[in-house]
Length: 117
Image (cartoon, rainbow, N blue to C red):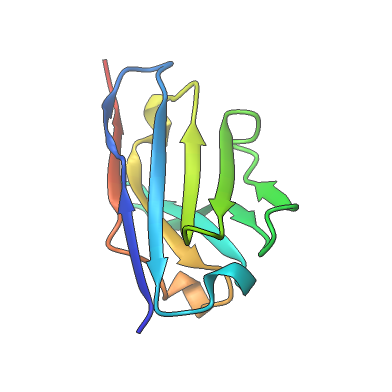
């Protein structure tokens, strides 16, 4: 059974930083492309970033490029997302997901990030 558990969210002021983590189990994490997606209140799921299985390739949505950094530790089956220079529009529930799952169906329960002064 695929299990993805996100953590690290919280309340932060604009311009602040957070690090999100995702613990993965139940599948071959080290050979799986992984992504972060987010959902703001009242909006649909939005892709944020993807990393390939070895961690050598990353891609970002234009809205977060230069501010967010995705990474992974295959020895620990963990995925991370470093969020810097946060903006109010980054407020959302953040999910880690298996990139290949249709509609990012294989994702965790999410962690809430709220950016507010």
